[in-house]
View 1 (cartoon, rainbow, N blue to C red):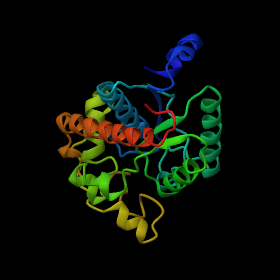
View 2: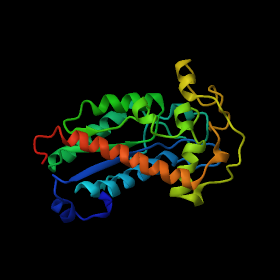
View 3: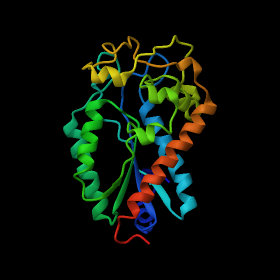
View 4: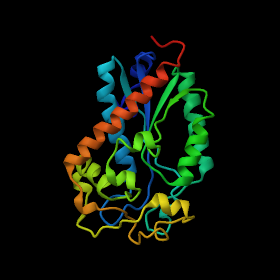
Length: 246
């Protein structure tokens, strides 16, 4: 279910004890010459939809909130099309969203995030800690989650590479342009540690890292299912902390 497609009586009728709002979080930023600016949105939405399918096995259902795309994207600022916003906007948006949900009787918010710009990630994690709602937020950059994803993701050389291109090939193949590109093996994780602040400085002159030419829809589908499972596990864990959980 998508929140914005329902009527207010339909929202009102949802069981707050078994329905979980899920917020896809992305960005508007360059993803190489072959992927759309909304790539992170597409990945987060795929993660949320996969989680909804898997929640049904636990007697629960997810409802997907409108995707939040307006986030810090400073690493891609040198490339046309990138829209970068302040960390303060991220914090304020989450505070207002949590307040709106709480006033309507919700006690848990799940966050599907696939945008890993360091400023964005820091502001997102800080803001989520301040919300009155319980939050299910699996930080995919943490080792326990990263180890469950692909080897390219774990390498850190994965922006618009095999990992992300595979997911977009699964979700929206019509948006993938020619991706037979030479590999860019530089790790963004290492670049961030070294103080780099843009993709170009980090060794990605075309705003991609990794090996997009190796992407496949089969890998993308497997990754989407794993992302959904990770989010479901986080939701189940957070539900155990709620006083009203069954």
